[in-house]
Amino acid sequence: MNPSQALEDTKTKLTAATEHFKAELAKLRTGRAHPAMLDGVMVEAYGQQMALKTVANVTAPEAQLLQITPFDPGNLQAIATAIRDNPSLNLTPTDDGHVVRIQIPALTSETRQQMVKVLGQKVEDTMISARQIRHEAIEKTEAAEKAKTITRDDLERFKKQLDEAMAKQKTDIDALAKTKEQEITSL
Image 1 (spheres, rainbow, N blue to C red):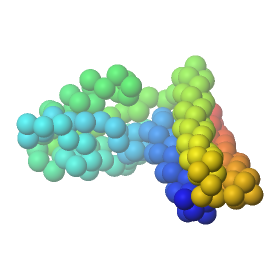
Image 2 (tube, rainbow, N blue to C red):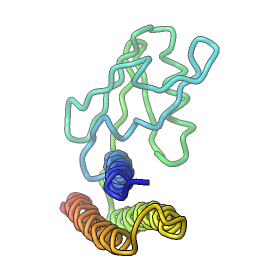
Image 3 (cartoon, helix red, strand yellow):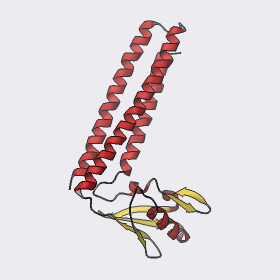
Image 4 (cartoon, rainbow, N blue to C red):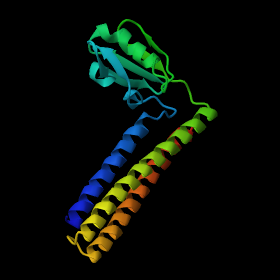
């Protein structure tokens, strides 16, 4: 086992965790409409579950409005139903036979506080994931040190570099969370 390769693998996994966190942040509601809010919506189309963005174009023509234009007009009702039945969105779509429109209600102060709590949970989930990645990497390198494939100095150097990578990731996650919290709480 090569400690520098293990460190690179761990950094790649940490980067993937950060990217996942960014994707989760995009789904959180702020005071404005944005197409990423609907990224998790699955639509029953052509006899199977498909992601909304594969069956329709989602745009935000106004600050409080989302517009979904299906590629196949036959999927219009399925799209509206999928959005209406998604409990995490709590949105009411309307359709005019050509497009689905969703009026995004303004966030109340109570809703904003709930969104900040959800944001905090997503930060914690990401950090738990990062700590798990760190734990697995340390276990592997300690096993390599016990098997005498790396030296004790290599192990200690690896741990120090890993701690630096973890600190950098925590800083990045905290910065992203702070920015998103400002978006949520600003009127």
